[in-house]
Length: 172
Image 1 (cartoon, rainbow, N blue to C red):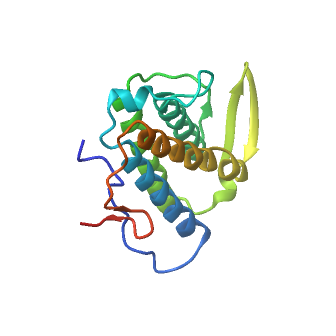
Image 2: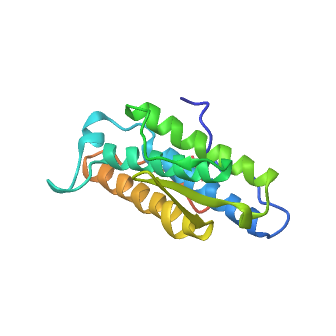
């Protein structure tokens, strides 16, 4: 699994634009998710704080589906809420690869006004602007990644203490 993206964050961009800022945000999300999910055990995946809450595994599944929706928006596809993957490693790999593809797509398409979210909601297409990706899926990914970090700490397997999210590197 060492070939997955976002084990560290790359160098700074030379300028501040909407796409470079969003690109850096995606790198930060990818870095946090990478280390939140690195080395999880079954007991960590199964942990949930209460009976009607989501387990870490269910949060990771949800995060994967959120990145599918974002990826579909950047590719101009309709997101249909289907889930074709199964298993922790598939969800982790899918999430990180989706974020990497989105990061790369931003280099090709800097006009975010042309990115819209298209959802298949019970057979009806719902279209929203790019803005909804920020307050929706991107923010949700950060929120649920934090839950995975907290849950794994509670189940006795905290993230690598060398992970420094401020600089985007693992310190020795």
